[in-house]
Image 1: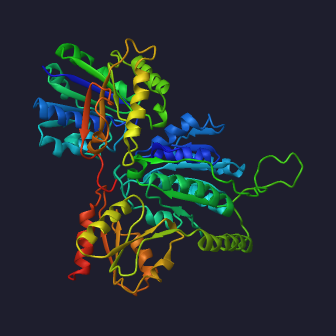
Image 2: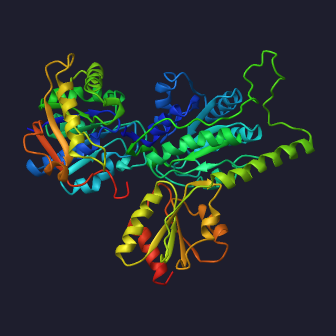
Image 3: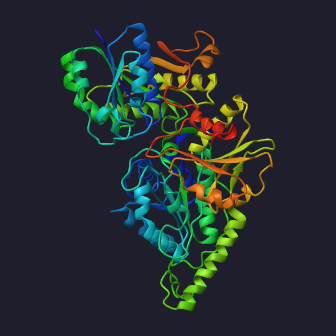
Length: 230
Length: 351
């Protein structure tokens, strides 16, 4: 049985980068079929559908809100073909749009999630260096907002502490500290696990073993969603 | 302190820190984060936010707010900026400061929502009716967009003119580490503002109408005298051409980042290339083309259009060197290798 990964976070938290890397990891460790449902109907740039061809080579299918997954479509209309994959309990990654507004589309998936009965991970990606989540308190407040809008509650955090190309180990660890504190704050149900840390390989190799406190680590070689000149 | 921000958000935050007290906008992709951010934060900053009934409504609200003496901004994307041209002509005619941000997309017409640079003519040649120009800033990074927003508000106030910034959709959506800190305030006399005189001074009138031929001619000449000052003081260019470079690549905005990588790729191919990146599109840095090292034998202009800035480069080069063009449009973006290929073909002959 696969797993349903719901991935949310503030705009620019790194949701899509995480989804693409998670899909690649699942492809490597479990094989296909793997579906990324690109549910970003808000922002027409930096969406997982841009990498459709590269991901297809790894057995990962990207389904989104555009005909032929064209990048230039900004109609707020989603093809729900991916829900059958949820019902069949395959590995499906729901790449939501940023912020609370991104949660709205999730309501359309509840019935498929109930029918499929696959385990659900509802992940919130946080980065201490985005102004909207620049403290443990703000991270926790954001999770509360998401929980308030959704029938499902966040089940774990993803630390994506970074400064893009300027990222150092210190950034990753400072963001981790805030995420760990946020996870224990009141109003989030039980204490949340820090499920993943996502970071570039050279930074990962510079951090002593045991310093990363998340249950799993997603290590990437280069940013999937950025071109060399970005 | 360094924070991570998207271009669109950073432009807003910089505007607020720069003292912008009124924002009027209307939704259009890919600039929606600007009105969204302003709707959340403008009021907190003690300013006013209105989602207007249209782009035309928004620019005319800017006219009113600017006439009252406050710093004001609007934003849109290419087709919406086209709609604002009438209001911008009126702002220029009434000598009113205003900052207009164009997060540009592909055209003409409704076009598409992906990045393009086809608004160059409209932005640099007036755009509306009558004799006027507007300074146009073209940042290539989120940090530069922040720095130039501060600059744009100052230049608008100092020279009493609408000022445009163009950040194509890519820059608007791109996240980068940046610093937004207050700058030294400039001292500007706004005694012309219609801010309520309570009978203490003669009545101020802000207007672009002047039915006297001599009077209107005088107003236009006075404005063009200010344009001369802008040309002298405010022209900006990032000239990276070094002695020994064989070819100069000219590009602006986020696509110039592709050209930066193309220059590196050309170096790996054994070709010395240098980048010229105009930061102001009006006034245009024509002088840079008069002082190129003698090693430069060709110019390659790269734009996400069918070739618009190309005309200004030709004016600057004035026939002294061959000017070539490589562009993509419609939302397609060139890769570093495409620019490098075009440049290599020119340098090695055959183009």
